[in-house]
Length: 277
Image (cartoon, rainbow, N blue to C red; front, top):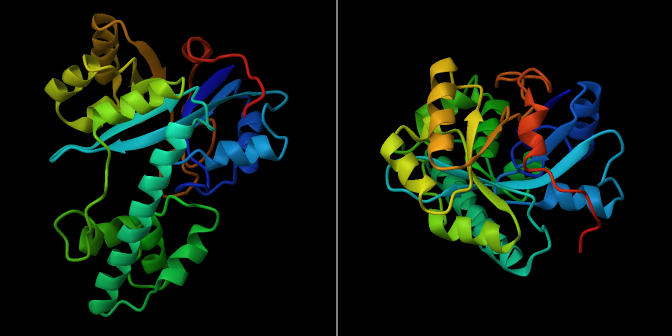
């Protein structure tokens, strides 16, 4: 049976509710999944507090995906098997959430100044359960209102770095993220290393407390997989992989189960599910 260790729900910037994601994963025949929402564990908490985690027929690994600070490159760090009720983690996530809300408010204000008729309520309504409000939510509102045909074009025109309505993202330092994940009992893993676009930086992170490397990823070709597998072996890191599933038809993969990894990689990080709190 296959597995997927990188998936998002509507509690960050995914389309599916946690229940829908679990149901889709079961229907696709997945054995292990990891819910790794951006800067939040609310999706896993929702499942647990509604008696849906652990779930019969599938193993769910509680996770998260942090955006790390770097002046040039995009660094994402996954945390697996975290204690979602850990005090230090909760405090830091509250800080990140507050910064996200301030950021999206500033983006909306800039867009309104440029003549785009959107407001904070539009974004919050579209975001639904998500507390991790992001540029993608703002972009989807712009598409919904007919200003751009796709979110990608909205980003290219006004929302990406260097464009008129871009607002810098508050991000934690990589070392802080690694420390927080470990203090919460988790395993810090560098996500999609090719997308960092700087292998020297990737190797530096591998020596600064990272315990795993996301070798298998939709944008990694066969050569990338070999390269990062060798790097994982060099630094004695766990190997992981996942689809980065969000559930939108314009973003690959559009369906659960299209991109998966072998169970053996999930088994190395899975811990027996037990009561939380």
